[in-house]
Image (cartoon, rainbow, N blue to C red; front, side, top):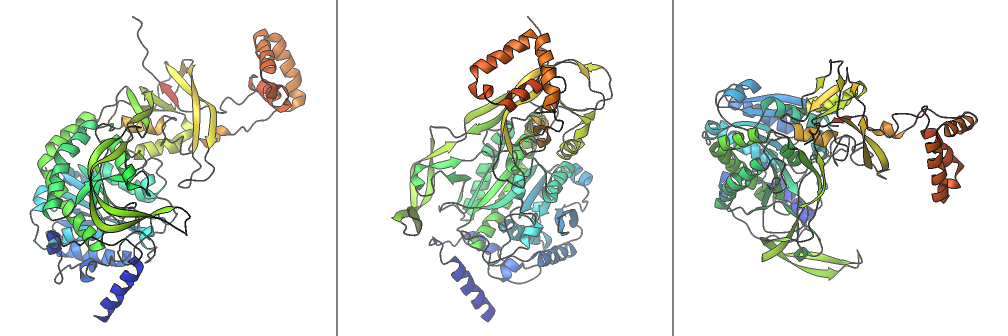
Length: 597
């Protein structure tokens, strides 16, 4: 009793800076078990504590021991610090291999918790749900679906536990850290695949082929009434719109009703355009492929991102997650065949693909359950700040700005060709579930293009351990040539859309943008002026057209005219001695030959 009093006072002192709460007493409180077999640490603490990695693994072992005929635990990977990443497999049939799971006639849901390990609601909710299955309270669930449950993905970040990791989040008392042990954000790694944690998840998805992927987070940002917000790529911006429409029209109403019936407040996954003026509107987020749900959209893996509201109490958030998962499982069991048909239909690649979007200038309008706030001038920040008051405010027409405006759309090649030296890219493509073929035919390949970098700019600071790069390109026709020993990636395959985003250098989350081809920006052969000057003089004499081009550049570009180094470098670039790979994207594009009418 004394320990509980100390713990409660600690929670109050840590959370005393947060906005006041609206009262909540939902029906889902009945889900809590206060004693008995497999009562979780979360429940024993009154909804305030989430267990350590060590205690989590012990609970997994107890859970498996309680129902070994329907539960199994497997290690799907290992962190850089050597911690095993556990996944629980739950199946009514008691057969747990990927082949058995895929062939037992039930849909499979993959539930992932702790990708940001401070946002650990999904772990404790998932344990309660599995406990209720194991003890017979919810025998119905495994008659509907198979469950894959990763309680902690970011196992190293999970153990960087502290009461002070997230200043704007109510509980648990101690929580993990956002990034992994190498300070990388796992939910920025779905394209570049730098982390063993995300590589493990991709392996699970490719092996078990889940029908629904749920990634559980906790949001930051403004205060509002919703306790469980969630979303997916909306159909108007989706590259798999048939899947998105089913999530919108079938899953969302079902999940919303399940949450509402348990007296939770489900809401849309949105952010605030101006955190100091809520009324200015919301930002409708469209995730890129570096994120789990953006990757899922391109890979035709139906994916829902859950963002529980950080200012709601931990108990309320965990219970809301339990109810959300219950609703998602039920919706999947009902709409499984329709969703599966949509997945098959979307495993084709269009002739054009949108690579980037920006926010529209004109908003849409939605009804929104907000929280009253007042603005005040802060002597500390020297600007206007916001104080939320803990009282409901309803917006009938709140602006919402979606990323509807297309910034860049490209024609999709029929195939990409990678040189043999880039086998590390081939390995990542293969891990992504993309089919790569090694070319053994010595016949020349036609209709090839190469992307030449015209100008480029590197980020000033590293992002996710990489110096990202942006560039503009010109595209050159390449002579017919044999590509024996190269790697061919056809875009007419199930993950052709994802392959295009990874290999087209203009895509914001391409391997190029992440810096996997940065060696093309360096020249490693050099020239001495005593050799270049006589060679260039002879070259210009033998090539009058080039000589005229040089004279014109001297006349029209005074900076060039006055810069000896620039003049000689230009001349060097016109010689056959110049590095043919400098600023040349090494991946070639093949397009269909247009038939002349």
